[in-house]
Image (cartoon, rainbow, N blue to C red):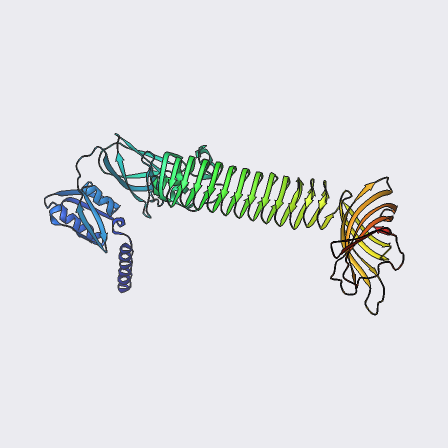
Length: 593
């Protein structure tokens, strides 16, 4: 049993020694007492107790100095500060602690003071890591290490200096430094039991709650400090490497000049960045960046960058960027981007983009894009795009694009190759326009040339598109049928509840057999009446003025008048080969829907 107990005690001792060796020398804790012992002997005992060795020039340690002290579970750092009273500094190397004398510089107008110590929980006495220790006037700050130790250098211009200690879930603590010279102090901070309620009471009107999560948001000073600091000007090389140091993200500047990049709590007047500007809070008046601007909250004024502007809050400004502008909350002003503009809430103003514009809340103004505009909520204004416009809800304005327009409810006009809407207040102009509550007719008809025609009319009564095909069977075996296809537009005017007047303009190509590649163009003006027999059934009849254009040198045109020979009222040749024949005709048909 004695052997087992001895072995266990040996293992515990080895474990303790190993744990001590993994802790930095200055943070190793010991309990030790000295009674009138010489300083070299004191150092030897400390090194033996904490399992390390001292290295120093014997000339800096007095052999005659006697020490009487009692330390209970104190770190080596604190013991040495008390013994030497700040006259000796030290540096760790391997398992050695090198001592050297502190150089005393000539007295200057500004006396630098080094304040060091530990931050601890006032209740548990536990040392607190990642606590912020800062001086508001000099904008100097440090963060405690994993053992709760801090060391800050202050240029003491006045009789006293103030240090503020901030740590999330703890009350802010203010310490006033009145004594001259370097000092070692331990600062106790009080935990907040109900942090969620106290934090609201603690937060001032200037404190920032980011609308947009920015880089470096997990920095200790950002997480710990509730106070807002102010500076007239910031000059920065990189974020946190500038005149405001590690407190730059807690400081609002009037002016900010950033070489490669800068970080601020906000800017009140002008911010200039050759690459990038980062602001956690509000920015007003002017902000310029070679690459981009990233703002956590609101922007007022002018914002320009070579690549992007991204804002988390409301934007009331002119935004200019080579790539894109993104606003997570409401926008008012003018957006100009080489690629696109994105607004995740209401956008009121002018949006101009080389590619596209996107707004996801009720908005008003004008959207202009090289490719397309997408509005997911109500929009008051017009959309103009090179390819497509989409308004998922009501749009009080017009949609103009080269290819496609869609609006659930459009108050104005749609102009595009294809137009689709549920309801339309104006007229759709394009190749195909489909209005769900508009004008739709499927027509089967016959005229003096083609005894079978099928046409589809779509749009609104004021203006609709007509797409049609027709055939005049001649010889089904030899495939010499005469057939046609065409396009037109028209307008239907209401005469009574059952009677409408139709005016149509159509143009069609007439072919014989497979396809006639020569000019064979028949253009018509229709004038007729539509009589409703049933809710979705009507008959139509009317007159047509026809003009047939052909190439007079081509001899294989079809014979048009197999059933009826109209009287040609005009037959004229233009130039050397273009012939125009004109006659009056008629058309009858049945219409459905």
